[in-house]
Length: 124
Image (cartoon, rainbow, N blue to C red; front, side, top):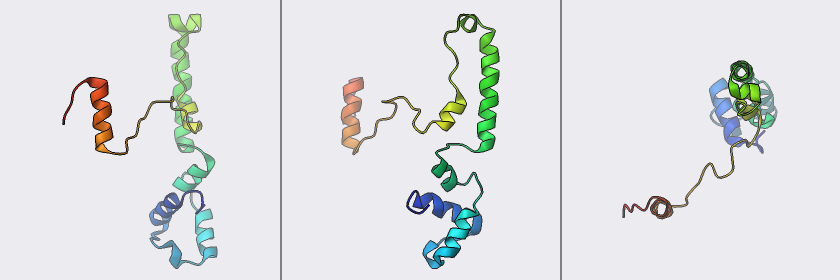
């Protein structure tokens, strides 16, 4: 767990047990406490690849089914086009975002250059 996501484990231990210094504990005790974390803890969800708890997943499935029932009653549903996207699939898929959805910049200068290129407006 430490090798997978140290920060998530640290947050879970602090939240669940009030432990802020993991190094102060023997490795066996740390392992026991980590194994005892609830299933929707940050580290266990990170290890399983889920982006939501079981409850959230069940709610997403219910919303998906309801959305499909409504969609079936529309003209698009009768023709089988424009099917609604699944919320549950988005929770289960590790990288379900479309490519190019997020852009990161190394500096404010890089951001300003891209902003000017896209909008034609310079703030400098």
